[in-house]
Structures are given as C-alpha cells and as structure tokens.
Length: 118
Image (tube, rainbow, N blue to C red; front, top):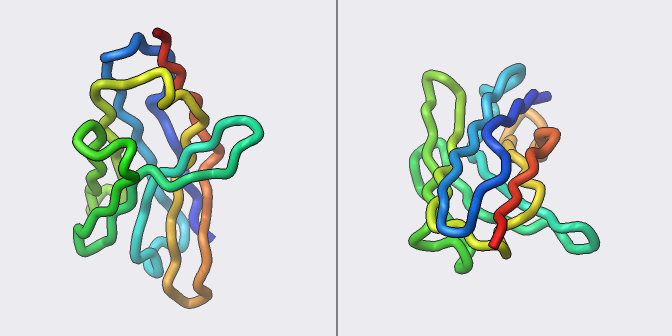
C-alpha cells in the first residue's frame, strides 16, 4: 500500500494561486502514475490532472492553461500548481497514486480543502 500525505490547500481570492504537494511513501515501486482529483459535496470525484512516471500529463478541460502538474521522482512527490483560480475550483482535492503492480489499484490521500472566494 502507498501512503499519500497532501499539503498546500487553503483559502484564496479569485485570480490567486495555490500549490498542492503530495508525498508518497510505502510500496511506491509499483506506481505508474500520480494525480489529483477533486470532489464537491454531492458530486462525483473528478480527475483534475494526472502525470505518469514517464512525464506524460493529462488535464481536465476546465483547468487546462491554469493548472500544472509536475513530479519530483527522487522525492516521490507530485505537485499541482494552480493559477488564475476561480470560485468553481472550490473543492476537496485528493492525491491519487495508480499502482500497476504487484496488485493493480489506486491509493488515496486524505484530501485537502481548496476554497476560492469571489
């Protein structure tokens, strides 16, 4: 199992920036991608951004051009730089690690609140 510890959430005004960090530990050798998802109360969890260990990225259309995901492989840490934040970005953000082996699956962080005021 992979342990994920997130940091960096908070309250920011519209147009501002935040950077989320997620440090992975434990059985990290099988991870082939890490990413960020977000969830509003009463809504499904949605993908925000994902990066593979090879550096390929994938973004939700709603955040393209504003958010940047990056990974520091030696530190086993993934970052989400969020710029030009909008009130609709308000949600709990969850770090995700996708395991390819020995048992395929997903591990999740505890979540960090991001609130964007108008």
